[in-house]
Amino acid sequence: MAARRVLKAVLVDLNGTLHIEDAAVPGAQEALKRLRAASVMVRFVTNTTKESKKDLLERLKKLEFDISEDEIFTSLTAARNLIEQKQVRPMLLVDDRALPEFTGVQTHDPNAVVVGLAPEHFHYQLLNQAFRLLLDGAPLIAIHKARYYKRKDGLALGPGPFVTALEYATDTKAVVVGKPEKTFFLEALRDTDCAPEEAIMIGDNEEEKQGIWCSQCSPVSRW
Image (tube, helix red, strand yellow):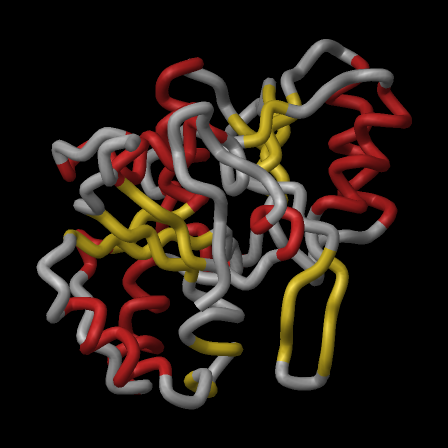
């Protein structure tokens, strides 16, 4: 009989799993309390690019979730890590509320394009500027490629369709840093001293749910 795996860490998605915009998912606070009582490390992972980690934490605290900032790993953090690693100057197609996550990053004379969820910036002029940078050889970095996300009024377009449009127009391939990329989850686990096979992921996204984010990891499951 195969040995039973020891569960040491749980990665929990935020938007759509614990909350939807400014409303908590019914029962989520109590479910999180029960999870914490299970003596496992909990980390919260999110593809949100609409706000900084600080603003996100304030939102969660208002919803009465007991979460600390060092427990949250965002795709914005992953994007900044890659920007610093590659030493590029990005054109940031992100929501203005997310800009604090890139404080100190040089953006003058951009030689890279970073795309997050930025409804106010997804218009022809800026997308065409990004298109021209990519034609000149700039790398395309997608914070994530979700096709849609949940809002209180229903589903809404995510950044994925816009990233795909730029890929198609420039015959290039984006580097994706957010979920469900394997490297994203491994980065989120880095400070847990936990092997991938000792962790599970809880989320609401069907595309993630159907995939296994590492050859040794558990598949994404629903709350």
